Image 1: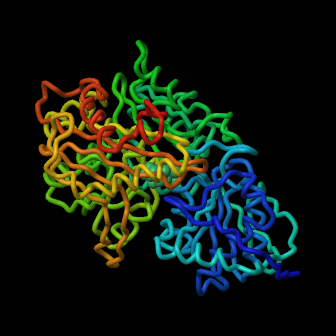
Image 2 (image 1 turned 90 degrees about the horizontal axis):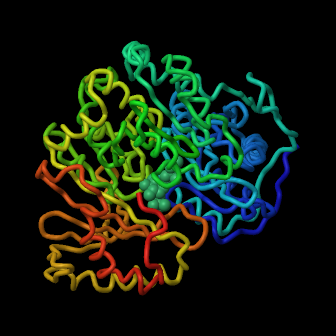
Length: 542
Ligand code: VG1
Ligand code: CO
């Protein structure tokens, strides 16, 4: 039986950088999830009889919302729902399934790197038929709908068994429970030289992969250990837990500190990596060397032709604006296009669809290619492995040579988390107000060349996205960038991105914070971080 349930709108269902993210108790309010799901369906046209992919990172509340999605998909007229077994699908695996099954779209349930559990975070994101996150005009439409929604449709179909593989009939619609790993692993086999990787592991190459008790555990076990023959125990924390073991599944130097310490230790493995809650991020650490995500993007782009899937070369590279310019130098050398987009993977979709970019990346540990329309943690790890196997050098050698060829972009991000929203907004407003007066002035002995609020003109569809981060450029190419996070769920998070280019090899590989010290001071002088927020240091430095 299909019911039309009346509801009243919530006023806070505006999708952020990557979907709607809220605390679990917010999502558990009466009709909260239903309102948002119906607002998504109401903003779409022509899905009758078509396929919807659904799955999530396994966090608390995942299964409940999947049941709601299935019951509402029946009532709204979808023909089929494809769902990962146990409700599990990594974000890149969901993107792949949408594309492979020619689905109408998909709902991905995740709050990514944010913690999970009854009092932590949950999220819902809609991805379109290209497998990529809904573009801004779609998320704007969803938000607009959510503010006036008065009813949603749901079918009384009872709970579907998400653990048994196979197809069943649910209220006249097909529900197909699929192995979450199989199609993804098959895709990876088409891109990388699995024989060469097997030989690498056979020769004694040691690796550590920290799945952080999040979604990539089953993927890493299957691909690294079963298919590639990496030693048992290569994948660590590989059982997905509803609360990620109480940790933040955020692969950075703070939350993956154990991995970092091991990689810097005396008996370090050859290669270390980690992924986040929903499997789209990657942390890369060679023996004795951390590789910043911005550098990793540049190095992957420079060497991608060594992997079978990219041997024809790259069409172009795209990076988010705050990401360092290291990839720009690679693009220049390769003679291909480089595109600078706002933060968030949704801005890469058009460039990938149009064949303008092959590899994309963000400073926040996101890298991916045109094989799907999401960033992809394990993909980045496998591409690194393929490059290491082909070059026969250590990660550290590859990094050192890369810097010698292109120069080093010293880079760091300072996050001030859970700042009171009013104070964060006041900081940004004050900064905007003085942007025009900054050029020509000096801070910490460095002259400001230009300052603006980044706006993006999409070269494919002509759409314009304004206010995407304030950037202050110094003479000589150094810069600081300020923006507020669009994924947090409590208060505001101020992100400060700091970058300096260094051409001289004798100055490469030094301590990053020391190399950026004057710019860090300048950032505070310019934005008044201490005076506005009352903080004297960042919460997280990556
Ligand atoms: C952050 C990152 C951004 C990334 C986004 C989603 O957004 O900075 O680069 O695309 O998270 O990643 P923000 O607005 O908080 O800075 V994920 O792995 O959370 O889906
Ligand atoms: Co993520």
